[in-house]
Amino acid sequence: MEISYHGHSIVKIKTENHVILIDPYITGNDLTDLQAATEKPDVILLTHGHNDHVGDTVEIAKANNALVIAPNELAVWLGWQGLNTHGMNIGGAKEFDFGTVKYTKAFHSSSYTTEDQQIIYTGMPAGILFMAEGKTIYHAGDTSLFGDMEMIGKRHPIDVAFLPIGDNFTMGPEDAAYAVELLSPKLTVPVHYNTFPPIVQDPEDFKKLVNVHEVLIMKAGDKITP
Image (cartoon, rainbow, N blue to C red):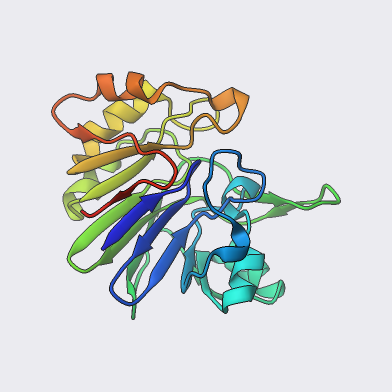
């Protein structure tokens, strides 16, 4: 398994036979190294409906006939846009041919704003546990700190956790550092920061707050093998 980070909350996972793309906010994202036109995922996983997470999902999925897995209301709405979708909900897990997906709690909001300024309700926001090839990856989505993170980490020992640190809309560095203590992952990568003025953070500040556990600050395009 190869995992790469691509700015904001974009994570790409390559298994032996599949490419999985999480929250592909590419167009309009000055921090990413990706181009929507050249991405060829088999699967797109979405944490929630905000535009900076759904991003280029429609264009990429249509171009590649990719399966889009999302919280149910978001999956239904994307299905109306002509995509091949599979809806899930918090606490539910499903084994696919590319790995197992389980949705977890995330305390945030979830809606999609259209070009004509209509706000579409897209269900509950969520985090994602992705399990394949003996590894467990946790993408927390956009969330505040919550106590059940300890339960998530105990029930599903995490190899790599992607946690937001931007503050204002999600956890800030202090709360994210406490989340690391609750989750106890082997490795934590900070995400969802510096994309917009309200979420400007120095990830080194977050890293300094984390005791015992390993933190890796990834730049867009960096890759790891858990």
